[in-house]
Image (tube, rainbow, N blue to C red; front, top):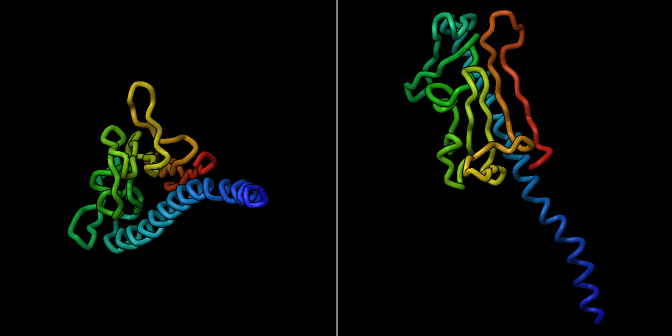
Length: 164
């Protein structure tokens, strides 16, 4: 009887901590990706300054820099634009697919325009009743690179880990 009580107490303490590990892992993944993009963006900006195109808007000239593999990275005001193809794809080394191609094991991204892209880790993906794959609005990273010339801060991040 005493053993059952002890196991019950251990179970009530240990299980909630174990369940929360998944949330902590997803939060860490999102924060890590944000840090990776920020660090990579610093390198891209440095290369852009060397190339002399750090002040060019994407809508004017389609400026770019070249990575170490010889691939172009499209930029806006010296920072990588918020799209996957020819931009973040050539900057990041992560397994990611467009939301509709989700296979259950990779990050997903949804690109809303050239100035906004969202990422969700695989465990935080939502599949709705029609079978559409969606980024969990409460567990995602949104990266912005605004294309308007009137803004003073071109890049920003929106990190939501409330529902991870």
